[in-house]
Image 1 (cartoon, helix red, strand yellow):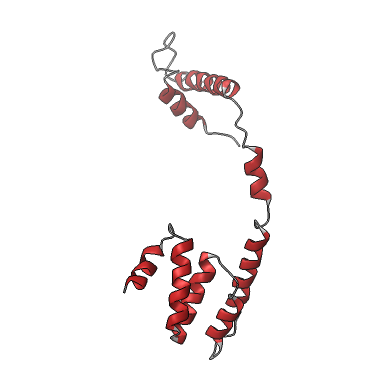
Image 2: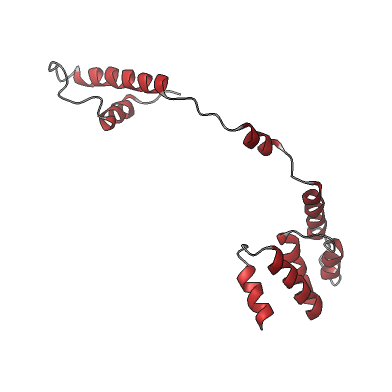
Length: 150
């Protein structure tokens, strides 16, 4: 990728490595070329001196892992199945059935809403309690805690 020369000049001026008064006064037409050459030289020097940035091996390995633990994959599969429940009279029952063993925040939130829609107050409250205990830093924590406090 080529960087336009006016950016290189501006970069060099910002770094303070090139000033308009450096050296002998060139002709007005030659000044941009001189500044450009000096800016390019400064950029190449800076690139040569800059240490190479390496991402830790652990971070790269974690980024390549497909999902995480086996439990996470099971929870995500359950959430996907619950999202595929057919819309209709049995939708909420299907969601609850698919997410019965799931413990992720997303799964618990879906179960809470399904219990709310079915007016299963005891099950809803139990699920909210599990959510509040397991996810104290989640954005919905306070909302669900207020529901428990009522």
